[in-house]
Length: 209
Ligand code: B1M
Image 1 (tube, rainbow, N blue to C red):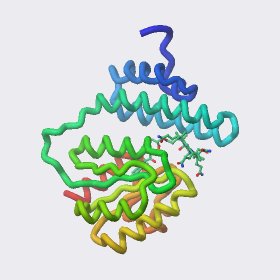
Image 2: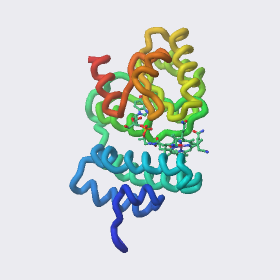
Image 3: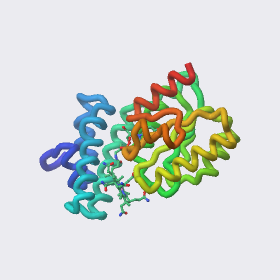
Image 4: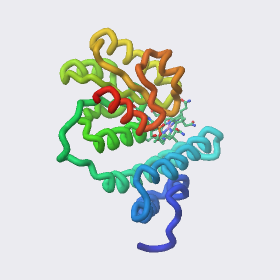
């Protein structure tokens, strides 16, 4: 629309919201939304996370980058048209655990599950274990997906799993987030570790086939 177009990666790293949305608009003309997310959006946020950790960037810049990523994601989400016509598959609860407000990854998982016709009950971020348990019980949900991005909040993920096991034993639990790996996920009692959003879909497909 104006000026020169910078790459989505650069727009996110430098925290330019409008440029990020414009770059995303350009990219979706020729590329799949999910490929754009994997090839540019996530690597850019990884770069930002690294720069933040090493003291190159500070919190205001981290926030601006997150806003830019969100703006791009809004554009891409619009192109991943969720098909409301298809028959509904199972219900899945998603939540970012207590103490954690990182929700970009969870939102990607949500869009993908919806795209595969699952009915997602999104409890949002910073969700108390009791709220996950209550919803799983009341809505008779058989799959709960939990996300955590920080070493300090994985404990709350573990606590959420513990309470789910006790009160809703039939419920399967998948977990994800950059701070986890398969080994750690197993140690805190999860049924499945999803490395990425597509992994979450594959697990659901296998569970509900
Ligand atoms: Co913060 N942050 N942040 N942050 N942030 C991290 C996580 C951090 C690793 C950065 C760093 O220091 N290197 C670090 C945690 C360190 C640690 O615990 N060891 C950190 C910190 C410290 C903080 C604050 C404490 C900073 C402060 O205030 N001093 C603060 C915490 C606030 C809180 O939660 N209480 C904070 C705040 C923020 C922002 C608000 C600015 C923003 C979040 C905005 C938002 O989410 N709405 C932000 C961001 C953007 C990041 C980084 C840079 C990027 C995270 C992200 O969105 N990645 C992050 C560094 C990093 O991860 N490289 C960082 C992209 C996203 C698509 O990936 O979430 O991993 P991810 O999701 C993937 C997979 O993991 C998987 O699928 C997704 C798609 O492939 N997946 C699932 C995720 N969840 C899943 C669930 C599933 C299945 C798959 O099933 C249920």
